[in-house]
Image (cartoon, rainbow, N blue to C red; front, side, top):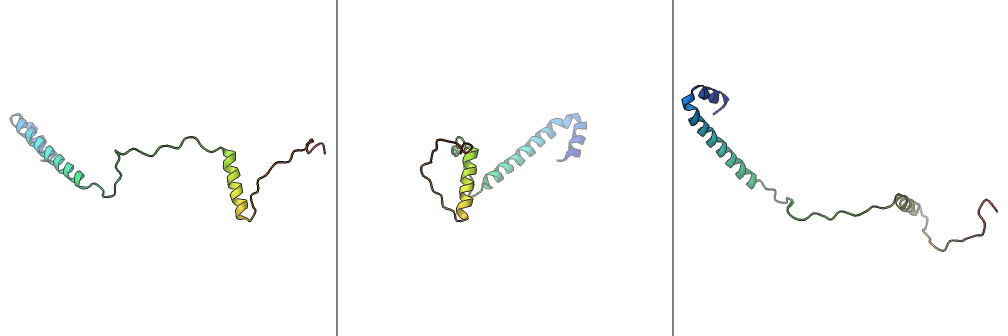
Length: 97
């Protein structure tokens, strides 16, 4: 049943109920076919959306920490070694020397 058939049927008021029922049956049949196809088309390696997701990471790294780590990586690849130790303190600043 297409749109033209429906228009012709609606012109005749005595057949409206019959065509409405026929349309209902056609829609239900098409919907049932769609549901069956959707159930059979489930992907084999699909993701189960009912399982809990990954916990979100809280916070972030400080921008200066990101830059320092990147610079350490670059200089390490260039052959420099990372050495940490006590910092020297002097009584004066660079401008008083």
